[in-house]
Image (cartoon, rainbow, N blue to C red):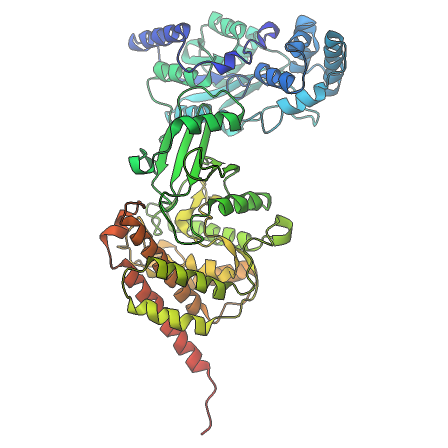
Length: 615
C-alpha cells in the first residue's frame, strides 16, 4: 500500500457518493466502450483487500481519531514517516513484529501530538471482527464471478498479527490464489508481486482485472497490461466490473417481492434511523423488499450501502393478546445467540412507533436455503435424511439451553406450561371465532382433562418446523432458526410434536401454510417417519419416548387450528397476507378434525392401560 495514498479516503470522502461523480461516469463510459468493442476476454478478477473487500485503514483511522479526541491526521503523519523504510512498510513486508511496530508507531504519534497516543487500541479496532468484515456487495460479486467460471485472487498488502498469523479476515475459499505481502516480503506497487499473482493464476496480464483503491497500485498494474478499476466506493466499482464482464453481480434475494401499499413503511424516517444506528453515512438509496415467508408479522429485506438487514415489525390492525411480540422475539434471539443456538444476529429493538408506525427490530441478513416443501424434491435420499437429522439436532440444542446462564429464567416461565397455554389459546380462539366448529368444542373440553405431567422446562420455540430453518447451501447445516415470536418456556415435547405436523398433512395442503407428507412414501425418499423422528430426538436428548405422544399431536393440531382461525379473521379486513386462508374456509375445521383423531387415539391408549375393575 503506497504510504502517501493510505489515508486518501478521508472521513468526508466516504460520506459522499449518493450519485456517480463525473470522473466515475467517465470510467463507466470507457468501460462500456471497451466491452462493446470486443476489447478482450477476461479470465480472472484480482482484488486488493483493505479499501476494496474490507474498510480501508484510512477510514478506520479517521473515525478512531474522532472518537478518541486525537487530532485529525495524526495517524497519517506517523504512517508516512520514514517512507519505504518506515515501520508501516516494514510491517507489511514482514520485516518487523507487531510488537516492534506498535512501539515505533506509538513513539511517532506521540512526537507528533506531544502526548501519549493509544495506538494499540487503534490496531485492535483495525483488526477486529467488528470492523474487518467483508462488504456484502463484494461477497456477492465474487460468488457471481466464480459461478461464471472466472478465477479470483486477492492481492493484499497485509501484516502479521501478534499471534503469528497473517491478517486476512476473509474466507480463503472465495479465491483461487491468495498473495500476501508479509509472506512474500514484497509489497504493492512493486511489479514483482503482481507478476507473482499472475504466475500463480497461470494467466497473462491482459486476461485479468485488478481492483484497488490506491492510484500508485493501479498505475503499476496498468503498466504491466492489467485492466484496472479504481475503488472509491464498492457499489460503484461493482457496477463498473459488471460492465466490463457483461453480467450482473447482484444476487436475487430469494423469497422476496415488492412492498405492497398495505404494508409499506416510511422510507425516509427508516433511512435516518438506520444511519444513526449504523454510525455511517451509507451510500446509495435505501432498498426495501418484503419477504413472502412469515406473513403474520411483516418482514422486510433492507439494504443501505454495504449493510444487508432484515426488519421485522408488528402488523397493522388489532391482534389477539400475546401475538406478534417482536420485543420478546428480539430478547430471546439475543440470549440464544450467546448460548450457541444458531439464530440471526439481532442489532436493535426500536419500540418507538414514531419511526415507521409500529415497533420493530433489526437483524443481520443471513443468506441460505429455506426448504418449503418437506419432501425436499431434487435431493438424494441421504441428503434428505441429513436435513431432517440436522433439524432434529438443532431442536435438541434449543431445548438444552441453560436458562439461568442465558438469563431466561423469567422468560414467560410457567410451572404448568400446557394448562397455561390452553387458557391462552382458548381465549385466542374465542376472540377470533367465526362460527361453531364441533371438533374444536370437543377438544376444548377433552384436552384440559387429559393434561400430561411436565417432565422439564426448557426454551420452547413455539413454531418449530422445517421452513423456519435456514440451511447452508452446500451442506446439511442449520445456519439460523427463524420466527421466534411464539417462543416461551415450557414443555419441550410440544415443539417436537409441532415439528411433526407435516407428516400428517396431505401434500395438497396449501403450500403458503404448510405442505404435507402424508401421501408420500417416506422410506425411499430417505425421510424419517414421525415415529422415527421422535425416537431420534429422544436418543439425542437422552430421554425415554413419551407414552402420551398422541396427546401432544392433538395439542399441536389444536394450536394450528387456532392459528388458522386467527389468520382467517385478520384476512377479512385485509390485515394478513395469507391468500390461501381466505380461499379455504374449511382449513380450520379440517385441522381440528385431525386434532380430534389424535385425541381419540390417546383416549383409547388410556382406556387400554386402565386396570380391570372387579365387580
